[in-house]
Image (cartoon, rainbow, N blue to C red):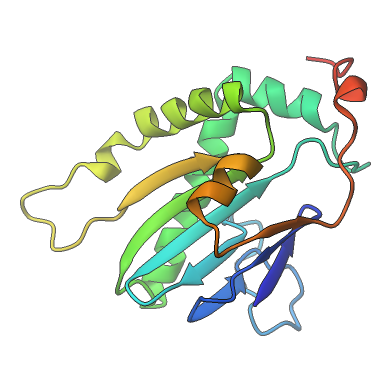
Length: 181
């Protein structure tokens, strides 16, 4: 099954089930009826695990946002990590309430930035999600098996069975260099 987000298409062919979790069309079967709830872009189920996947492509041409400049401001002030964490938590609670989380859950963010920025995002998420990755002696299940952040290159290395195709050309890096911070 191929799913699209932010001008990127990911082929989840080997998945048992894959859905666009932030579906906004009320007529679509995957529509989730709580308006304005932060949620991940995709939920992908494999034999033994579930992946919550969030896609961010700050270099895509989109008149609805300010692109890379806005993204870098969110990264610098910590709002990006907060947003990503909220998407995970709300998605987790929604799927838990649907009784759809019988397998370990992994959170993966695909962010089309250059490699030097990826560790900063990863560190911010890990710092803020520490409580989820530690388990209580009373827990029967862990709410977060792993948290990963990848760009297009590392995604291809880690998830070779889930190829990404760019459907909308990215804005050239030279154009983005002048983006306001």
